[in-house]
Length: 299
Image (tube, rainbow, N blue to C red; front, side, top):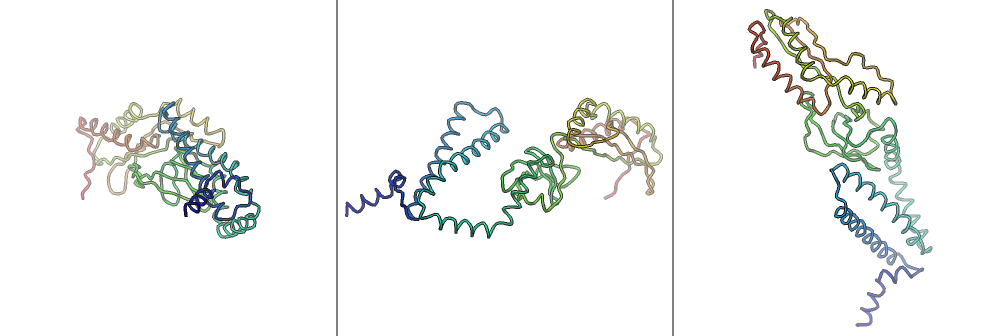
């Protein structure tokens, strides 16, 4: 009995399995499990020691470092392990048969995901940190994998665009099957409009002057920053933004009130904050003007 147990454990010894050239399927499966456990242990120890010796300065650096090291480990251990796994040639037809069956079953989605990954990584794709909208869902890209990418969802309300704190995973072939809209780090600002309704007996000219002052003194992006962003984007795209300074449009609406539309460029992630700043400044300035009256909205 003791000899049988000893022989059993000896047969399960990873070094014994490595030396065995004519392994059967069960022995190869056990050896593969050993190799996977060793690879995971080596990766965990490497990351632990690296974080102790040189801690990351920010979450972005930690994410990128883990991504690169994980990919490096996968490539290294795949190169090292493949000759070991296939050293038993008797298993080669079985392995190839199983692999062929799996490829036939999942060929469509796998190839589409691969095509999607190359499109994402190409010049017309996107990167981690970009904000995109796809399939009527808007969010910031927080991860790009070989088979899927992940968005941190942003509220669909155009007045807010705040994070909902929900992660949404998309297969890479989603960008092949759907249109997507991109606000990249290369050009991370968008046009926004803030509308103010005045009564017809208001001094709209004075209100227009006040609103122009608010936009130019409080919110306008530095012209050199806008030009720099446009030059950067023009390396890959023919961009003509035209007028980039803020402007106030005044119109008389059919419902009997005067509409001031404040149009300005704003960083995409500061859209709500700038709306709050505009609101506060307008309320402060109009409060001291007895001849400017906001339309009272019933409801």
